[in-house]
Amino acid sequence: MTSRRSFLAGAGVAMVGASAISKAGAASLPEAPVQSSAATMPPQAPSSGRPYNPVVTLNGWSLPWRMKDGVKEFHLVAEPVVRELAPGMKANLWGYNGQSPGPTIEVVEGDRVRIFVTNKLPEHTSIHWHGQLLPSGMDGVTGLSQPGIAPGKTFVYEFVARHAGTFMYHPHADEMNQMAMGMMGFWVTHPKDPRQHAVDRDFVFLLSAYDIDPGSYTPRTNTMTEFNLWTFNSRVFPGIDPMVVRKDERVRIRVGNLTMTNHPMHVHGHRFEVTCTDGGFVPPGARWPEVTADVAVGQMRAIEFIADNPGDWAFHCHKSHHTMNAMGHQVPNLIGVDHRGVAKKINDLIPGYMVMGEKGGSMGGMQMPLPENTLPMMAGQGPFGGVEMGGMFTVLKVREGLARGDYKDPGWYKNPPGTLAREWTGELPEAPRAKAGGSESDTVLTVRRPGEHHGH
Ligand SMILES: [Cu+2]
Image (tube, rainbow, N blue to C red; front, top):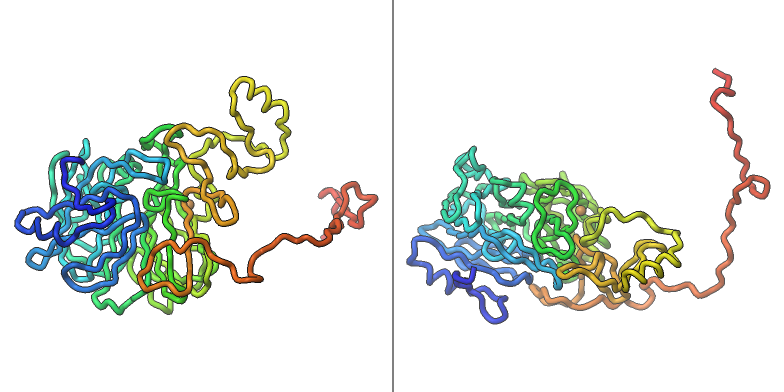
């Protein structure tokens, strides 16, 4: 990785797209820009070709191209990468151009696209352009549509991006290992007319999952269902950037699912419509309001809404184990168990041991020492304390008075007076409850065995 030039300026954040492209102009192969940072890059206006409204890849970036005789040329390099999942944890993954997931590819409906794919992995690979309508020989299925790309080799794919929509790319070679190692990327084909399907902010990310044992760095790829790190673009909360939007803007969030299970994606404070699926944009008359959209395995969904409700709103997968980071799955339910004494005995053997769960599962405030390179299960902090979330969770921040295109984190929402849940400090009479046993209860329960029932 160090032998390749990196086109990064300053703190590894800004891409110097234009100069990189002109430098490569004479070469037969376009340069392959590398990203060293897991930060969200600001949307990139197109440097050549037809205009479009660029997307924002959450904790990611879009791949620059060069124009050659009217063809958009991209260069992806499949290679081992180190991805920071959140501050405090890095993973040895496989990805493209320095990151997992790979960079987002943005083109316009009708563009002719040529993609060079160089394999720097220790085994063969290929790329399948998930959802594209293209010639069979460009579909990237190893053995079926092409031979695998051997280590050290480069293949060229070329096709026309025929319809606008939301797509993904991923290997179709040793998929179980390569996708469990993080090989995937997003693809957006913008409409020919930038006014069509226009929104003010367009966020994209992929869902991926990893099984990384606490204290280790490399995913176990034979895992079928017991993944322990659930990610947006190979990041876990609190490592996932917030989605910052200006009040009353039209917002689109595009999600692709390359995990091995479905994810019901849920937004707070707003209703949305699914406006784009795997097959393209949904006609307006066929949309209906939702607050949760299930994204099945291999699917893409784009949701749209008007951000008319200022605040800090959770946006997350609704499977509660997917909003947690790595944990042991063999932990019994200890709610209501009295551990006094047990903890003391264990502490004599293992100083620092902490009993978990006797008052529920809340571990936000616990400071049990963790193995190295391991995140707490639920780590995010909010303005009122621990958010008790990890994994597939981030915050939609809707604010008045932001500048157009300002994606800077505005901090926590300041609730207007009278709009914040508060503690009740008045009298608290005991609630009347039905008592067990019958005699003191108002409720009379008559039980009859089925055999005693004669009728009909
Ligand atoms: Cu989920």
